[in-house]
Image 1: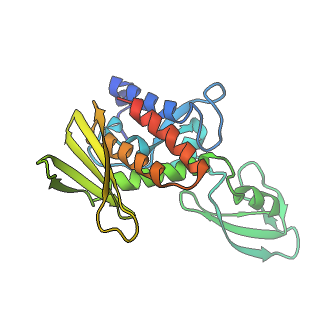
Image 2: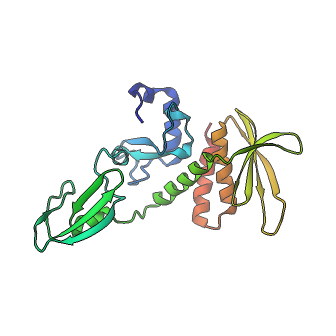
Image 3: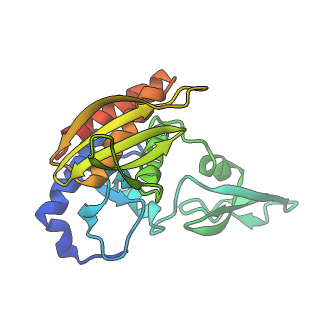
Length: 250
């Protein structure tokens, strides 16, 4: 989705993009390089027609360097995310590696595919580079952001009225419930946990989340619930950091 260049100097966009970069520690989540070495940009994972770039949930966005951002949009050849489809023995050095900057003569032609680039035939050395697993911690971070984004945009949010006659919207995650009370810009949320074999939910304290959009409160509440349920120390650490950033953003 394209926007006029002037929209990216809008104060609202500059403030929003700064929040994303700060959340990600001012580094590219693909190559792990920081602002000292590369130009950082904000990439939207999803686009909604008519929506301004700053009107998305933070979890819809990633910090990428200019190069990795271009690769995400298929503007330059990606260096990861390829799938090996077939290997053909040409019998001799009768093929040419199509990877940019290589061009070596090859005997074994590896046919590979990238969803944003298409098909390419490369040699044995280049195929190892293109299909290597990303072992950076950013892989876990991106996976977590995707989970948050998918949850907050779910259509499974329903309205209701509590016993104290307070209106709320709610959604569930693994039988546990999130309730969000109030309207912008004065929200609060509450987590309700459900144990196995127990019919009723156990409601926790009501947590204030003022000066935030409904979308931002959905993010905050989901991250809080995931952090409560997680058994992984690594995931808990990521969730604590993300919760702290979301809580401080206004």
